Length: 143
Image (cartoon, rainbow, N blue to C red; front, side):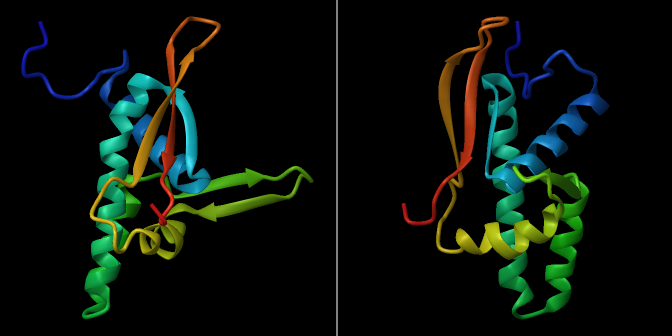
């Protein structure tokens, strides 16, 4: 029985879980939505919200002391995969700095929101193995 056992193992060892978490959070920040299994989405959602809150607080404290924002950026860089490469429909390749996008675009969007930056939408079963699938989305700032 898993009474009082926190976290999910997802059938992976510790280093594989950490890499999975870092990469999926970076993809969520970069693409602003990801399709994954429900178990992975439940594992990633609280971590992603904590990263966004870290960036929000870093920006707020950085207005008073710029060293605090640098510190928050370094903490965020340690907790997410740093770069993502995107290819658009025309074949153009663009390298995105995930931490820069987090601090410049994503966190300022939620400066007046007290939490709940992500939404998990269940989208049914995967046809191959019947796994429960979900879509993790960064919510709009108008809500």
